[in-house]
Each structure stands twice: as C-alpha cells, then as structure tokens.
Image 1 (spheres, one colour):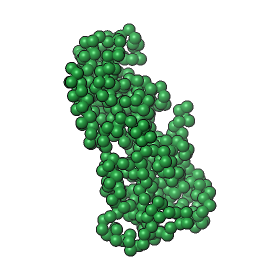
Image 2 (tube, helix red, strand yellow):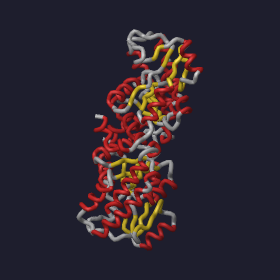
Image 3 (cartoon, one colour):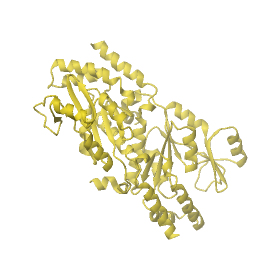
Image 4 (tube, chains in turn red, yellow):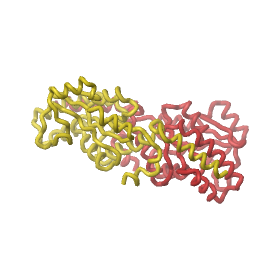
Length: 223
Length: 223
C-alpha cells in the first residue's frame, strides 16, 4: 500500500513534515485529522503530554501521555518539550524526541494543536512545519455544532465559544486556510496540501542530486 | 461545475496563480498540461507568441500566436512580453496583458515553458508563480519515449536529447518536482499542487479579513 501510492518517488529521499492543524473547537478539525491518519500513509499523530485528568473515553499514551504536574515540569525544564502551553489551568506539551526522529527519517507527523502550540512549533522548526487553519463556514454553524455535542456541559460550550473567537483571530499566521463547509471536500483539500508539500524541491535535499546524476550518466552510457 | 467544486471558498477572494510547468521534452509534460486544462476549473493556457513556422497540425492563436520577426521585436521593445527566449533561431515569448488581467481577477494560468522562460517569470512575478519540474523516471525511459514519436526526424530527436540533459540540470530552481513514472499519478500530484496553492493564506489578501469580521460579528450578535 505504502509502496504503491508513493511510487518511484521513494527513490528520492526527503525530510519529514510537521503538519500542524488548528481551528476553533467545533470546526471539524478532529474529524479531518482522523481521516488523514486513517487514509494517508507515512503520517502519524504526535501524542501530546498533559496534566489534565483523563476522561473515561481516553487511553493513556494513545490520546495523550497523562502525567503529573511535577513530571511535566521536569520535562519542560530539561528541554524535552518542543512546545507547551497552559490552558484553563492544565498543561499541554509536545515531546521532542519522537518528532526529531520522524523528521530525520522522512516520516510525517500530524499535530492537532491550538494557535499557541502551532506558533511555538513554527518558531522552533519553520523548515519542517506546514500549518493549516480550518475555519467554520459561519459562526452560526460553529455554534450549532458546539451545541450538538452531548458530552459537554453548557459552561464548557460557552467557554469554547469565547476561545473560538480568540483562535480565529490567528488564522493569518498559518500557511494554508480551509473553510470547512463540506467535510469531504475539506479533507481532500488537507490531503492535497500534504501531497503537494511532499513534492517540494526544498525538502528533496537528499537523493535527488544523485537521481539527476544517474539520469544523465545513463544517457551518456548510451550515447 | 465551477461553483460546485470551488464551494464556499469562493467567498474568499484571492490573487491568480501562474502555474509554470517545465520538463525535458518527452517526460510527459504536454499530456499533464492538457489534462490539467481539461479537468480543472479556473485554469487557462497562456498562449505564447513565436516566430517559428506554423506546423500543419497547429492553429494560429490556439497553439501559438504566430508572428513575424519584426512584429516580435516590436512587442519585445515595448515591454509587452513578460519573458522571451531564442531557441534554435526562433523566438518565443509570453504576452504580458492577458497574464496581468488574469492575476488581478483571481484566474489561474498555465505556462508550458522551458527553464529559461520559467526563470524569467519567477524573476518578474515571484509572488504569483508556482513552478513544477517534471522528471522522467529514467533516462532510458526518456529516450524510448522520444523515439516513439513518429512525427520528428532523427536529427530532431538527438537535439532534444541534448536539450533534455541541459533542461534537467535546472530542476533545483523550481518549487516542486514530480517524477512521472505513472501518468495518472503525476497528473494527480500536479492537481494537488494547484489545489494546495489556491489555499495559501498569503494569496488570500483580499476578502478573508472581511470573512473573519463577519464570523465574529455574527457571534457577537448572538451573544
């Protein structure tokens, strides 16, 4: 599967991509992220570390690495986090090691992250980051989607709505913007962005020089 | 059709894209270009001006604007050409007016052009240019494809092969590189590049600010 869809371009090595996906809550980001992870090869999720309590539906080391505040602090102090933020009294951060390993090996990672985290990743690893901001089609639609979620309390919904306004103000700091008026189309647009970014010449630092030499040497051998 | 595939993103205005497609002769560029023009909306071909004799299969103002050397010179002197080059004693150039009009109106144009022309377009209109270099899978494959073409004389084939080697040396100057080992996959990759580039925040200079204000105003109105 991986070989079939990557094709001969496998012969051209490239560096990995950090695909940063942000949006206000309720704009469809999580669904798009899940679809990208399920349908695209060579893309894995960056699992964040957090101090917030685990929900019943969540699994440790799958949805988050759940750690104590003391453990989080220790990691942050030893520069083992690529970015971190405090949201509503809880800490969230991205472990550095898995990301650096993936980048060196040409594997791509998806970051489902807010504008604060996205900004830090762009500052620390600009050459690797491809950032997409997902906008709801209208604010009415966003509110309708937030209200449709049964799991959360009214207070949570209202806080999210306030956060959404703040989050939306940061779309200009991203590389791409997708208006999610149709989930399937929004997914295909995100897929196109990753497909395109994988073909960028400036990621083909290794291998393509060799590829060119081989092309031309093969020709000279014949002539 | 245009409305259906563009969707609500139509509400967000953007500037036009100059899609520059280059490759050595025989790498499949013309087929990919034709497919892009047939299958994508809001994309039209930039028709070059040339002093070379019209072939029997060619139509004036469709394949090229065929002009005299004197007329070409007049255009070039009056800065009416965005780029020009001399190839084997014939002149080729891109009329400036249709391009500038398309860019202002948010329409995209395809340039089927060699590295010399591509380079001039990148120098003159960097913000609008998205450039793709198409590589053959191997030099053997390129030679086989060149020999399969019945229309051209052996001398022409050999000259093209020499040009191909020179052309390939310039792939690094492009934004993207596609290895055409499978025509359908190569087409879909080129399509993904244009889809992605249309979603870049820095092309959304006009309109998205308004869009954001409307989103937030709509929310405030409800709150």
